Length: 174
Image (cartoon, rainbow, N blue to C red):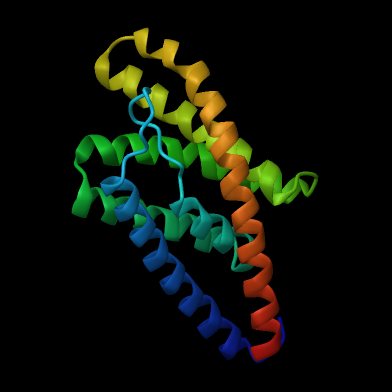
């Protein structure tokens, strides 16, 4: 990305704002529209398109910040303390995994997203077991690993296209 340091700083700030808003919109849509599956609680993770785009286009610190803001505001506006705790537990494991895999630079955006989706579900199950005081919820983990893999692949493919498009547009404009 070319341009002055000031234009790059402004670009990063604007991208973070736009992608935070987009993630919030996607979160709202996911909270309103339920997927008609016999398994409760499964979501596509569409807000992660924005989070992965921030990770690949803007940077690691910014992706962590945008994700934290999105989770906090989503819980405040559309959820409750439990939704905040579950989302945060999933996000912490997911972000750490995605950051490490991206830095290794071995996996594609899709691979990073799949790992993030699976770890997000794993983090939520750990939080649920802790909050409920029961390990019985762990039986739900195989289903969530499968859905995290499928949805992570879809979200990763879309995020890769979005990130590439945003990068190309930034190179033209900066």
